[in-house]
Amino acid sequence: MIALAKDPVCNMDVDEKKAAGTSGYKGKTYYFCSKMCKEKFDKNPEKFLTKEGK
Picture 1 (cartoon, helix red, strand yellow):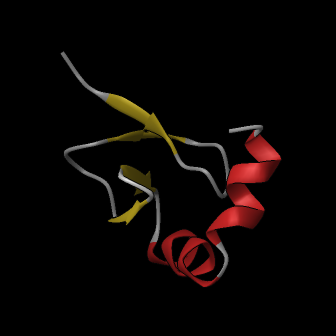
Picture 2 (cartoon, helix red, strand yellow):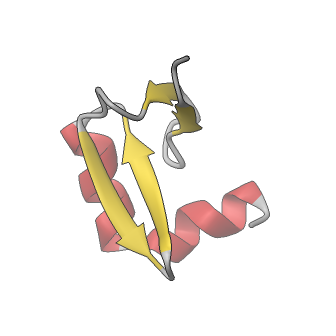
């Protein structure tokens, strides 16, 4: 079974084992489809998490 996570930046489904990057924030791991999405998230995580309503 493939574990999919949502990239919080672009909202794409990401295979957790093949993610281009991960970031930990407030005790949770976030997975990214690309290095660019990870860099955007790392600069301002709250911007993307607030957008999701989390």
